[in-house]
Image (cartoon, rainbow, N blue to C red; front, side, top):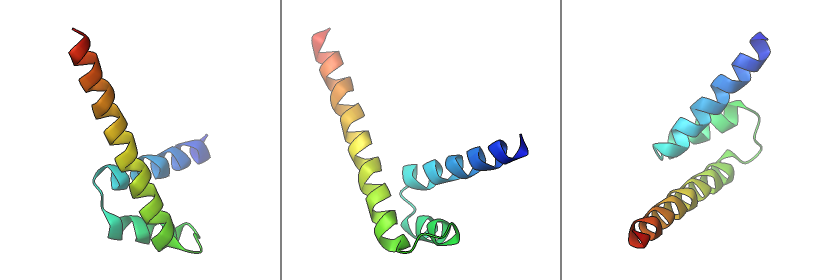
Length: 67
């Protein structure tokens, strides 16, 4: 059970770093997790995070326009 909590803690930290767009922190986190190219991985995570934010904003705007 402790292992699952440890994994969830890491996932939460990853999500936080992406949400706050902390590129340097994300690079360090990913390097510590054994990513062979943490710079590329961090850019891709941040890109995906931005796309998710844009999609949410777009859906919210569309929903508000339907009212």
